[in-house]
Image (cartoon, rainbow, N blue to C red; front, side):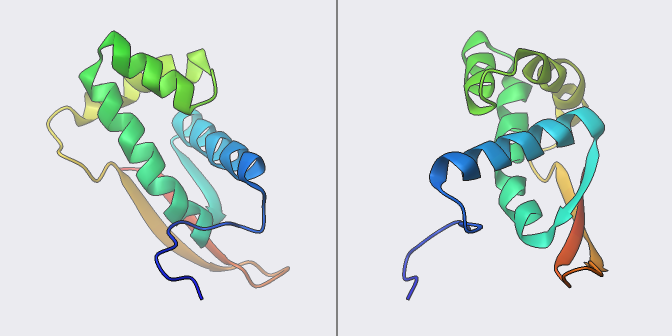
Length: 117
């Protein structure tokens, strides 16, 4: 049983799972919206929303936190702080939207579109 176990494992080891979330976050920041599975989108949402909240602060410490959470990707962090975060300065949360897109034909996995609001 999974009593008090939070988060999804995706059948991966921890390092691979962290790399997956980081790459999904990078793609979302660069492109604005991405198509992925529903479970990955739901796992990505709180991760990316925390980064946007840090980006809204704009301090040196928050920039360093963003860079470390994204695995040292400075350009992506700069894009988040300079372009994405200022759009949401008056918004108190809920920066992303998940739209369910049906199932994938190949393996019938649920797909979803995650995008910035």
